[in-house]
Length: 299
Image (cartoon, rainbow, N blue to C red):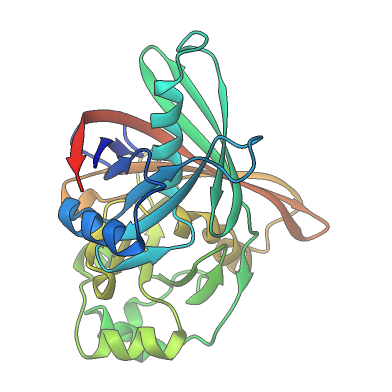
């Protein structure tokens, strides 16, 4: 069996930066084991498998595999898959906005895809609003797990927290960009930390520079991701963490998040959150994507 695939870089306007992704088409006949094997072969942080939707009103059904397991939802695979499907749509002008509806294990995720001046952009609407979960380990344990001292953990009113918007993430605010650049995975403390809090990885962030509101790094070595250049599903949960620190007022809030700079794969993720009566009512995560390659894979 030969299946078509496309690769692209997501959350960037520039080839060979951002977060790389593989999208395998017509994958309905694959077994879970075959999907996992293909994901290991691509060896990217995520590989998407697209098949016909259960509901014909939707665009496609998709599953997301890391090198060592499956995810119910992830940001850059969702946006990247939507961009691929929109680019393959033969109807209408490339400049026409397209609504892509993707059936994922987390539920239905809608993505608005635009193309302007040859640049593709996708904005997803979060299917699950952020909520606080789990118990945060003490700051001294967090610090030793990421190679910092305790006094580097936190800034202003920002303290570590765990928030879930489809996937639980441990958020660790650090003092400044210098501290962010010094973070690393330190075993066995890292595995002890993630086991204790029930999250697979840690999203470490601080105040940004330039036009970036926040800068971040994400590590999930247990899933075969030593470091991730851009983590859209963590950004979808980030408003919960920011609200806990800043007590956001009702209304619209927007931020730009930079990630991957320390890896040489800078990414920019746009984040918008709406609060009504003190609760999140809608969250959008967006970014550009660049098509890189296409071909066939034999299974």
